[in-house]
Length: 329
Image (cartoon, rainbow, N blue to C red; front, side):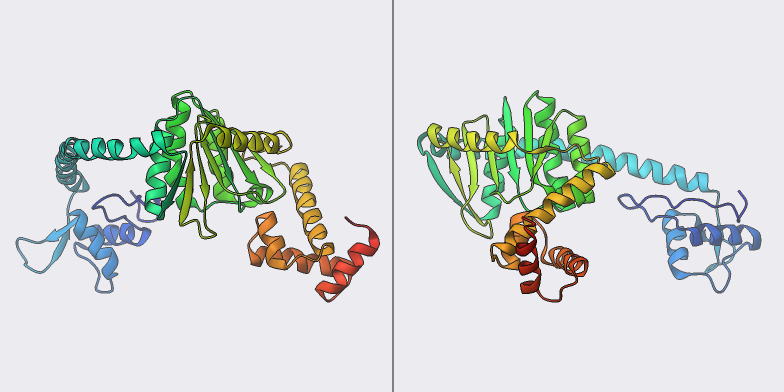
């Protein structure tokens, strides 16, 4: 391989130091000169040494010399395969060790689920555990409402496995987002993947509260603004009412597959702007309008600034007055 040949960096893995372009160049220089140049990058040296591609000379202690990469590959391959087998054994041991605790958890929560139509859950860890347990038992239908626009990539990554598992079990999955999810890259990618597997997703132009309903038997609702407490509902009448509210919203929502056309983007943006206009004319605060349409304060401020510029006004009051006078709502 010529030193000038571009080589893409190798992805990091467990215990593996990625070979950057400068590391490749340094290795090529070592092959030409028999040793690293004096101005060699310490980081590149460390990466090559860690991989075993530079080793100390037997004839001249303290001097690093290049070795055949195949030797490094063979050495690391054996080490990693051995480690992989050990990890598989540990995974089996972990499953066996946790089995009694899993049984204990199921026994301790079953009486609550069977007898209490309304249970207050305190702490996000407990909420997540109860939701995860309910979703893992879902057999027919999982419906969720997720307000606030796009969701963080870390959150989407965490829920991806459970949603995928539900779909593979043949569960019907429906999710409602707000229109602002159309402008969130990680959420669009997540939705595209899930819809490809069979989930259905739609968006609304207004605020709604977070909701999870499992098999139309168990529902989860937030019980505080910071969502650190929640209510688990198993009363059939209440769960049925919540499911009906979801279905009504679903009927008037816009289909969302993760992909967007220029025409649909214009349509969604127009609907969001109409919501802002109604809020301004109605005298709502900026914070209330931003929450209702699922925008961050910064994004909302940008929308507001563009509207002021388009109408040639300077203040929020002037904007609301101009919009009301023009009958924009």
